[in-house]
Amino acid sequence: MVSATVGRSAVLGAVVLSLLAVPAQAAPGTAHTRAAAALPAPDTAGLRSVLRSAVAQGAPGAMARVDDHGTVYKEVRGLADRGTRRGIGTGDRFRVGSVTKSFSAVVLLQLADAHKLSLDAPVNRYLPGLLPDDRITVRHVLSHRSGLYDYTNDMFAKSVSGFEAVRDKVFTYRQLVNLSLKKKRTNAPGAAYAYSNTNFVVAGMLIEKLTGHSVRTEYQNRIFKPLKLNDTFYVHPDTKLPGTYTRGYLTPDTKGAALVDSTRQTVSWAQSAGAIISSAHDLNTFYSALLGGRLMSSARLAEMERWTKVNSTTAYGLGLRRRTLSCGTSVYGHTGTVQGYYTYAFTSKDGKRSLTAVANTSNNATVLNTMAGTLESAFCGKKKASGTTRERTVSERHFERYEDIAPSVARD
Ligand code: REX
Image 1 (cartoon, helix red, strand yellow):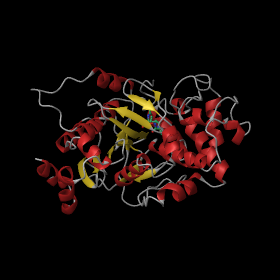
Image 2 (tube, helix red, strand yellow):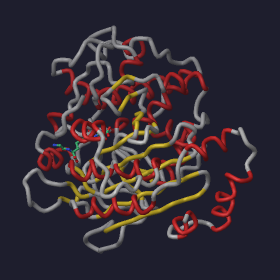
Image 3 (tube, protein in one colour):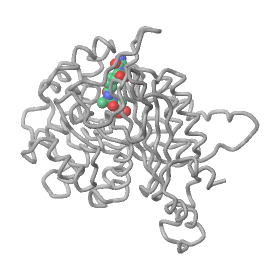
């Protein structure tokens, strides 16, 4: 059964054989054996069914790639481009949105490792006078506990006109922070979790101030190049995606209105909070390296994994989300939403099984919630056959209503 499942996906034969041999041959007691035994095989039929639903619910295309101990599972459905009708591919590049936040956090944690930054220092120590409250620390910013208002709430109150107004704009970081500071802060420093892009604009400012280089240079030198992420780019303020990419289609607020091709944009409204372009392969490599401890010291990774509760299934560390699935397994990564692209990129605790799933639409909460099912299929394995469809757990239903992924959806 396992070989039939694997055989449907594009996988190297030799790798499959070595994977199938793992449970029998690996030395007992190694971390590798324990991790392999702990997770059931990915449910590729489940993945296909999730992607089929996402397309039926309005996404032109959807795809998922799982990297599991060297074995690759790839699933696709629908189109990358509605004009040419090219099918979506798992090798396509796309806009990762807030997955960028993990990259920004990694750069800052590396700077903390190099004693160039203290997580508990006030942001204003490094950026004098930027914030109106000296008690806001770097840690507050990276864990969304600063209380800095999310300026995108207003910017994208109307999804299509809001997007068109900024599609070609180039903002300075300071302009974005000033948009936030016009509004009352959501909480006292450290007092509560409130997701805000403003925090990761401040993170970008910190990176540039402390290194004297652009975030682009720092992402490249510290992450893209060492991990050989050849599909990963930060091109801001350029509006084009390099190479082969999936187009993005924004769903208008008006029911029944035609999708808007939102592929081309500066993403200047997000920058270090959301402007990276990448691929499923590269995001899986990135989170695998991160949770595998290859991007920072174990002490700093432990700081990244100090969790603030978001809701019953989700917690936030420093630029990193933890989600606990219906089978009890927790996965680590980030979600992303930019106009036309929904991304889920998560890995297992040891970084050895990673999933990236993308739908090329946004502003469609149904598709967003459906795509969360790719995590269940990738990490929980086949659902127990208990007659018909399993009842969703309370936490799954809660998750659907409270996913803090876009301004149109309640955040908690
Ligand atoms: C911007 C609006 C959403 C999207 C946003 N994106 O804050 C950041 C991100 C970069 O990825 N955050 C999410 C637009 C929460 C994450 O961490 O996963 N929505 C859309 C609207 C709503 O325009 N009126 O859905 O395309």
